[in-house]
Structure formats: structure tokens, C-alpha cells
Length: 200
Image (cartoon, rainbow, N blue to C red):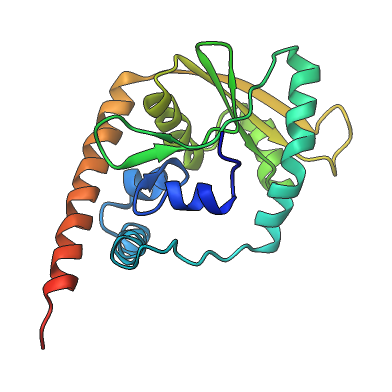
């Protein structure tokens, strides 16, 4: 297994559409998120180097807090979580890095958001829309039937710091996501050809 965020992991993801960015593709429809991510993959493919990524303080908080969230999930559900690396789609240049695999059918997505987002999730009892493409995309890439979504905020008291909801595979959603990803990757290919062949 390749450890997530290791140099090998970044290399494995090079130039591929990854689940953490599926929302930009699914909702972006060639707006800023779509265009910026397309350019990022073009640069990766042409240079052979992973794009430089900025880690904000909230992102670092999420990275640092994820192991505790995973432990809390295991204690709450008694599910055994297998940590894993990067999974590639069998036929297109896309992939996913689940936060864990559960048994033969399940997976795990952990978010450690700011307190406002976590509290809003507690209120709605639903997965925030911005994460659904990543979750369904994870099931699509790994060919699994369900995913547990975890929101964790240790700054809140024990009765309110952990939220878990199971999301079942939605093949209609996945079909729509796959169509948009294929269109996005076609544009990445076209943009690579344009840049490689550009002459003033």
C-alpha cells in the first residue's frame, strides 16, 4: 500500500482526475473550479511533476485530526477500517483515495470541518452537497455498495462531536458523474495538445 500524501502517492495521482476534486467537475461545468483543475492536470501531464498544493490551516487541522476521527468511528461502530492508498479506475484516468475500506462492500469518508459546518451537518442530518461527488465517486472507483460519511469536531462536547451517516451507492448519480468526468478529461487532453503545439 502507498501511504497517502507520500511522494509515491502524489506520483500515482499525477494527471488524473481524483475524487477530492469530483465536485468541481460535477458542479463546475467549465466555471472557475473546472478550468483551474483542468489547467492543473495539464501542467502535471506535461511536466511530469505533481502540482504544488497549498495547505491552509483548516486543511492541516483536518489532516491532523483525521486519525482521531477514525478511531472514534471504530469505537462507535465496531467496524474494522482498513487504511488504503490510491485506487485507479480501470478504463479512464481517474482515481480515489478513500479514508478507509470496510469489509468487502463499504468505505469511509472522514471530514473534520470548521465548527459551523459540523453543527450545520448535525442540524440537517445530511451529507453536505459538496462531499457527495467524492463519496459516490469513491464507490464508483472501488466498486463498493456503501460509504460511511463521518464529520468530527473534537472542539465540541462528546454528545455532539461525532456524526455518522451511511450513504448507499447511487448508480444514476454515478452515471451522471462519469459522463462529466469523461467530458472533463477530454478537455484536459485537448488542452494538453494545444499547449504542446502552441506557437506564437
